Image 1 (cartoon, rainbow, N blue to C red):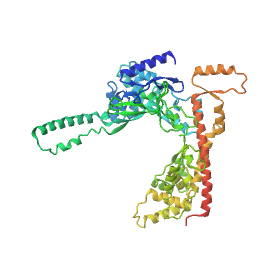
Image 2: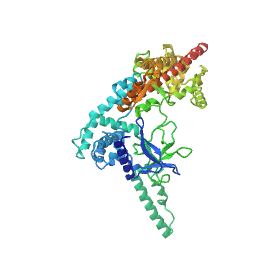
Image 3: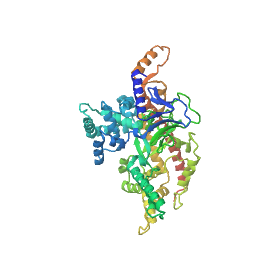
Image 4: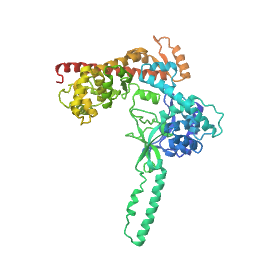
Length: 564
């Protein structure tokens, strides 16, 4: 770590301590260019509480509205509906980073200046995402952020800077992009005590307590029987046991890096009983044994696939067990199918879902399990759900029902879309019979789903699914080749994180003249994109195998039996 970064870290540590942060069993230090700063074990603590941060230090919407300088102007915009909770925090981050004498400077100075999410990719790096869901999402998000900046944020930031006499400071889109990335990569959803978020409720509670004390004194002195008023003391309840979920950044806690096997977690302490500091957030060890000195303290950001990890946090996990594939039927395509109007009405009644997420772990329930987890319970619940479907009993349950890994709601959508002309009329006839001649019965979404399944079975839906997955694979492979190409390419690459790494690697490679094939240098952003893309190809292949096998079984069984 460079001396300038060491100086920033020292200043930040002093700032934390000045603001009531207690580092009891940990320290913040530089990890590497991939992970940046992290939190490491410093000493053993008997209660496991390693770090305590007062909630007053958190950057939340309430904190922005209470800010002495920015608060009044932000409150006026907030009440008018010009800005929402998240934009409030991004505005504070943008403005405070530009202000010369910001009280947040030690914290903001130590945060990353660039990020690994696709919004920061070069054009060359972004091309590696072509064909993926993330490529289109990134294009749309960047366009949306740029529009928001030009139409609203730029003028607001200039206005807020003027309040502090900083009107000469230039504002650019990258300042807002930085604030957006800081928020999405570091914000937590915090379960704050209601009495902390709404202190006026606590004030009302304190008044009630004082009034109750006075009443007790009067009762004790005059031996008067308790009145109805005294029995209502409980109505002055501050609801301190309730929580309000608030998004925010918590300086200190937000330096914890992610791992699939975390050794710590954070909690909110409203009373001070757990950490000794009321209204605080604390980091507590979840390890079964004492942590080793200088061991990095990881938390979990949640069970997220590489698509979400890359989009929000700027990193991926190779062979991520929480990976998933998104499959969707394009809504605009419905207008081009036969009987589109009737099918659209049926889809609306069924509350149809036009897209689904296919988790990698769901393959454990399928025909070709990956054995990543025990899924017997999932199989039982699936059978219980589907076996109640046929309300007339005319169609038998398929033998493969417990092996079908595709969500029933999405299958229902595809069954409806794939219906042939005679099937549309049969479904309409069944529903008319069920509703009654005077339509005395209101048809439910389950009624429609049952009728569609009973008439159509699974083969049409599975064929549509096979087609969707084939198209998805074609999109993924169009610009970058097959899954095998990606895997081979990744084996022959050397990741560089900065210009100095590039020079060093080039120098080292030039001395190795005996190698048959020199590894290719690649930025971490490009490597992350290819790892994510390769995972999407793998999942598409695996789910396509599942869909094709189920289709063959479905066609075979529907030849043997069909509804009367």
